[in-house]
Image (cartoon, rainbow, N blue to C red; front, top):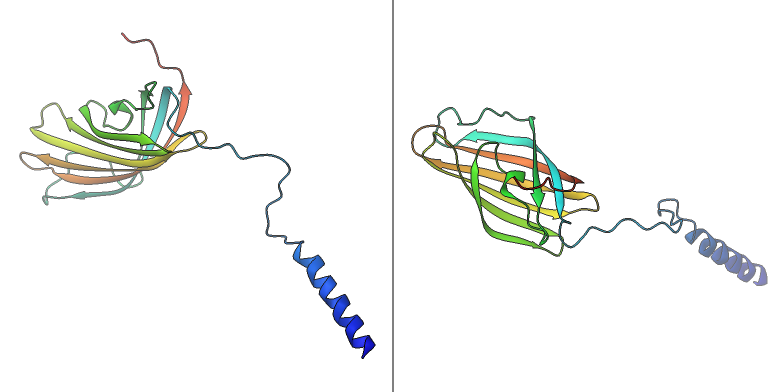
Length: 170
């Protein structure tokens, strides 16, 4: 009987010792991961938008030359309040205004209402994302409401990083 109790005690001790040796647990060498900021710090950013989906919404050839897998790069500034300029998320050459911006707690949400030279109608871009330690990540959905053929729905995955200070205003 005493041998059974000793064996049980030894087995329990060995089990408890092994419980502290989990190979799957990440090692903490005193290094802390960089925390994502609450809002984007002011500066110039570069955003890469990878096209994940493009479809015609009117059965005609879309009024955009991108295709799935394309990566579109844009640059724009973020102001002192953490609000990005529309150029950061809009197609090159589009004139856009920001509607309903929300940038707080690491969340990025903005809608752009855009026009394009030679096109009658609106191009709407909705951006949802979050700040990261080095910039931002998220996705955008572009939907067009234009007169004539070419309406489309474009979805992109976004990654962005701060590349420096904003160039002086012209």
